Amino acid sequence: MSDPQIDPPVSPAGGSFAFYEDEHRLDQYLKHRHQQVTSPNLVMEDPAFMRVAGKLGGQRVLDLGCGDGTFATQCIEQGCDSYLGIDGASGMIERARVRCSDPRAQFAVVDMATFEPPQSGFDLVSSRLALHYLADLGPTLRAARRALAPDGRFIATVLHPVLTSGPTTSAGQRQTLEVDDYFSPGPRTREWFGEPVTWHHRTIENYLNDLQAAGFALTDLRECEPVEAQFAGNAEEYDRRRRVPLFLLLAAVTA
Ligand SMILES: C[S@@+](CC[C@H](N)C(=O)[O-])C[C@H]1O[C@@H](n2cnc3c(N)ncnc32)[C@H](O)[C@@H]1O
View 1 (tube, helix red, strand yellow):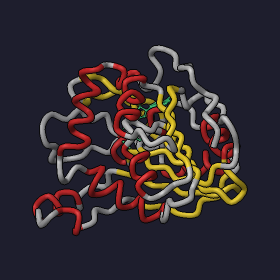
View 2 (tube, protein in one colour; view 1 turned 30 degrees about the vertical axis):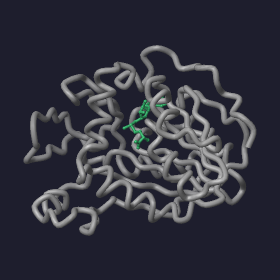
View 3 (cartoon, rainbow, N blue to C red; view 1 turned 90 degrees about the vertical axis):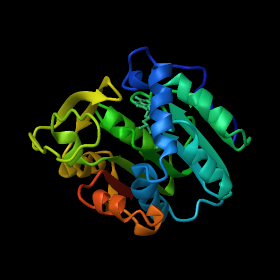
């Protein structure tokens, strides 16, 4: 694949990724993301995503809201043909370039709310835990569809709607979950790592309708049930993670 044509940075200040533009918050988030052996990303989201994605060898991957290059590394390790990760937060992209310096992986600072794919022909367009930052999924999903090869796949994970519905602010380890205003999609601002963050709540039905409106047909839906083998014998944490769904996975092909 030729170099992506979507650098230099086009992300506006204060986009939906603003939370990650602050160096201190970014460090806190990445510490949380990587340091716990039983981090929910590792024991719930990743096993579900990798199971549905299957073999990444030979694939041309476009990743929306790529973060610090963790998935880029997985793609490269599995022998993908190429990987292009876009993220609005320049600090994320800097870290991604450090984490994954293989020439098959390219990164660009781009707002996925308004991006235009540099080319079509991607076998996989992925987005892991990023779409719930967007107020309107339509333009991004339509761009993702344009980016795909005819038999390509779109796979996304988002925070589960039971988590994004309520106005919950949590301090320490939460023991209860408030599900409220479930059928009122829209922004929810809450505290995360001591700072306000805005996630956009949608029902499962809203996600399916948005995918359909963008020209996708759903092929898989998973709620990322924890995988016991990932908990390294920590039965208490496994039981805790079985209580509440945290992530929703949606996979689709072009209709
Ligand atoms: C929770 S992190 C997930 C990162 C990565 N996909 C992972 O699974 O580790 C969400 C990411 O979405 C990015 N993001 C949020 N809104 C965005 C936008 N409009 N355009 C591009 N990236 C965005 C953030 O900067 C952040 O890197």
